[in-house]
Length: 108
Image 1 (tube, rainbow, N blue to C red):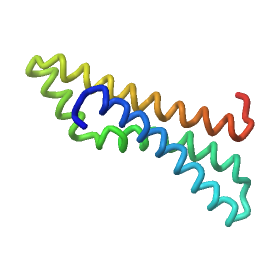
Image 2: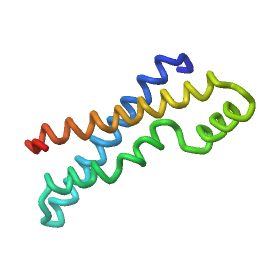
Image 3: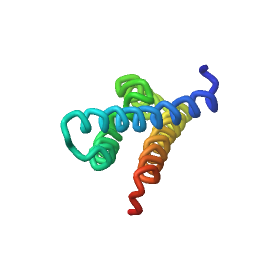
């Protein structure tokens, strides 16, 4: 799974799954606590975006190390790859959030 396009797709769908899964399971908890599930679902989805990105790219330390080596040792290709992985994770989280907004009927 180290091929660049495959890893990019994996990161996208991992971030998407984290957002959707966390928001849906969190909305079940809201039902148990007699809170509005749709509002809780959207709030959780907004709040967990950063954590979904970090989890999808495999943690921050390896990414920071690769960015550091790319910047200080001249490995521009590694920096570009990591930036594309981060953008892929951002796209996955945003897509998941938009899916949840469509499911909830929220038209912001």
